[in-house]
Length: 111
DNA sequence: AATTTGACGCAGC
DNA sequence: AGCTGCGCCAAAT
Image (cartoon, rainbow, N blue to C red; front, side):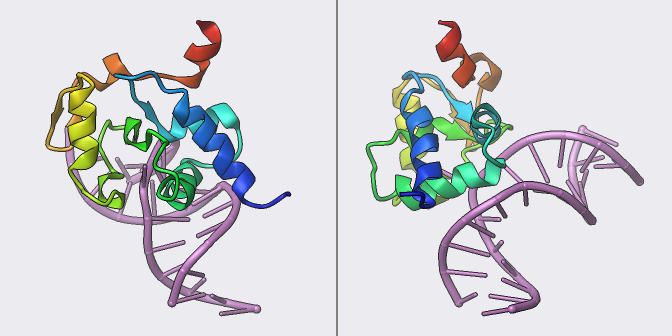
């Protein structure tokens, strides 16, 4: 069916491919899928990601490395806690050495 | 049916 | 070097 859920599934599919301990950005996913804007990535995760919490949406942040989506989780600290448990350092909702942990979908193909 | 909002990003100032 | 405005596309009101 050609419903809007198709976009969500594409975004979620990429998010599920993010390696543990790595993070990516909305813009990177949107650019990789060439589907729309970064806003839609967040929108898709919010609509579908909340229902299907099997998606590691906590590994998706904005281009500044800020946990902009923490407020969308049931617990606003879940995102930071989970990322920290994966070995990331977060201070004031900002991932430290973000560029170092940044992962791009293209990396998956390259590897 | 039109306006506002949103888990964003970038160019301009 | 930080703030503002504009673009993106869909959903909610």
